[in-house]
Amino acid sequence: GEDVWQVVGHWQPAAIFLDFDRTLATTKRGASPLVGNHSVDPDLATVCSSHGKVQIVTRSSRKEDIEQFLSMKGVPVSKVNSLKRDGRKNKAEVILEEMKALDDGRALFVDDDIKELTDPGLEPLV
Image 1 (cartoon, rainbow, N blue to C red):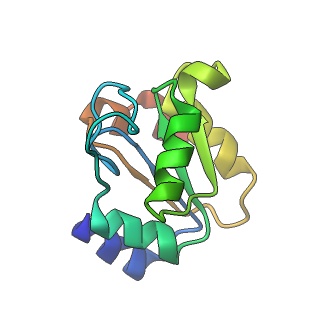
Image 2: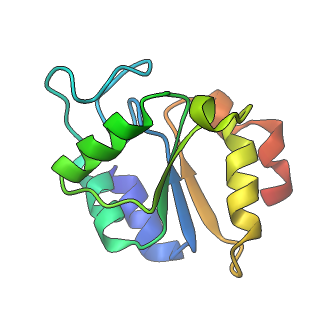
């Protein structure tokens, strides 16, 4: 989280895309953040609070639970994208679509899974 906070401060990206499970929150494998005792990464929560264009990109179908959890924790995000709920095949598809709407093409994608970060669908943005 601290490294991301520093990169955001240096690069000032137009958009930030965060994975939810095991990245922003302590949840795993799509579990509801409202069940059990879950927390958010404090540095990533600061990034969310200080940057106006942070979106969650998750495979979890628990979109409303994530929105409620983040609200309860005081972590503002502009949007929660649920691949399962939104009928998307991968995170790259969501990020590419959202990036088309931005004037500044600089964005940051944070995920705990290297397969997500190296998805060939992200290649047009590199």
